[in-house]
Amino acid sequence: MKGGSGGGGIAPAKRRWRGLAIAVLFLVVLSMLVPLGFLLGLHNGFHSPGHIALQRPSPSGDRSRHIDNLVRKLGPTLPKDILRGYVNEAKNETSSRNATPKFQQQKGIPIPPQVVMQPVTNKNTSNVNIKARTKAGADESGGLCELKYGSYCIWRVENREAMQDSMVKKLKDQLFVARAYFPSVAKMPTQNKLSGELKQNIQEFERVLSESTTDVDLPREIQKKSQRMEAVIAKAKSVTLDCNNVDKKLRQIFDLTEDEASFHMKQSAFLYQLAVQTMPKSLHCLYMRLTVEYFRDHSFDKELSEKYSDPSLQHYVIFSNNVIASSVVINSTVMHAKDSTIQVFHVLTDEQNYYAMKLWFLRNTFKEAVVQVLNIEDLNPDYYDKATLSHLTLPVEFRVSFHSNDNTPAIHNHVSIFSHSHYLLPKIFKNLEKVVVLDDDVVVQKDLSPLWSLNLAGKVIGALQICSVRMGQLRSYLGEHSFKKDSCSWMSGVNVVDLARWRDLHISETYWKLVKKVSMKEGSALLASLLTFQDQIYAIDSSWVVSGLGHDYGFDIEGIKKAAVLHYNGNMKPWLELGIPKYKAYWKKFLNHDDQYLSECNVNR
Image 1 (cartoon, rainbow, N blue to C red):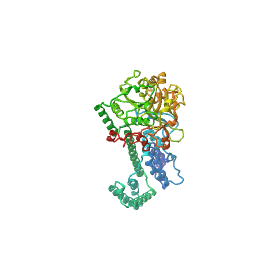
Image 2 (cartoon, rainbow, N blue to C red):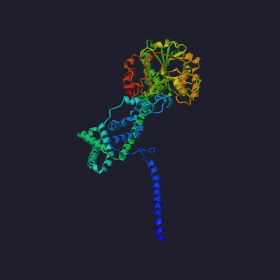
Image 3 (cartoon, rainbow, N blue to C red):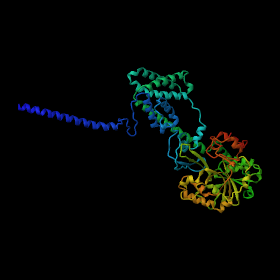
Image 4 (spheres, helix red, strand yellow):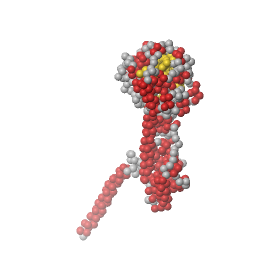
């Protein structure tokens, strides 16, 4: 009895112990599963960092939202023209209650606000980028591209060609989408028919594309095949399936397309800059022929030194290493002059191009005008370090970009400024009191004599002012130097220079001191020039010059015809293949197309 009663007392205790042990074990398992669930991102759609939640979609609305999320996740790194088709496709399938995300409504990708000053690289200077903070952004289609690649973006828009073999590209896209859906559909026993249709269309497309690389090679019934594939893809999209494989495939096409687009963009921009900076073959031929001929025959070599230093004459100065460009400047100026007998042109070039320049201007006459060619590397003024300035530097061109605090497009300003070589003028022309400096990318359409009677009101330079770029906008780069915030920048191209006033104010010495102070900053030539000539610029009437024919496609032809001077500042110079076609005629008509060397070297035909 005792044993029986004792056994009956122990049994309930064991049952209680077993219950507690099971409860503890359950709690332990639960404590492990809950963190694991959060870690894997399975709790209420929670996403672990760096991953996209792959949820099983219900109807097409949820699936479309899932695709939208995928596009938004990958979108910021992809060009808009590549994503447009996929975004539109997802938007069309989204139900009316699912509004388009704000990200897709933006024209481009926001970037950190900035001001950028970059030199146009066809002129002398190294690459410079100046960034100053403002409250702004830029769109990828225009502003961001220009900030990164400069005027190439303008050129590619104007020279965009129609897409070739668009049908082949469409078939490849359809094939990729079908391949993305096929593995998921094939796993569903209830969709055997749809799986068979997908497989048949995929095989048919693979066969067609293996035999055809262009639209011309495609069979006649390809439109019907494409429509059938489109219908099958639409059916696959309407099926509720696991999007794992679809997401992976879309990631692949996005990554591949992004890499390919980025590669081609960089390659095209590089080739564009190469075309800008490289001497055309025809010009190289011309220089070689002229140089060889110069050393073969010295009978042309003659000097009219009495006119070169006569202050009573009209002296024009051109810094150039381009024979035909400087020739066009002189020819166009002389052709429109009322009296060419009082005109003297001084062309300053480097040693490499000196002999070609010398022969060209000795064998070509420009009415009664006189042309002097100087090798700047032979000159040795005593006020500068020859180790610092022993070669020719051409006017420096900068593209200055400002962004407003709203969503308006970025404003790009092209500013052309004096180079180091310009600050040698007072020493090179010691006997002259006044000169007109012309860039080698201008064309003169009217008589420039009124410039010589221009009263500069005590200023050093008469120039076209650009008030879209003011000193105050560059204050973070001007440092401790005193300046007026509302002071406008100015343009080279056509400049009336009072050399006497220049010498009195020691402009060159001031410039070299400023260059040393701001030499560590990007755009030092621009900053030093703006500070040097602050309050020393006389604004000439804007009707004198039309600037921007080397980068702006939007000028009115009537306005161009009325201007006294056309300035082709920018990368797209008229002597290059990249030149803007509708502006080239105004430049080409001042070339001597009957010249033997131009004909033999096929220059600008």
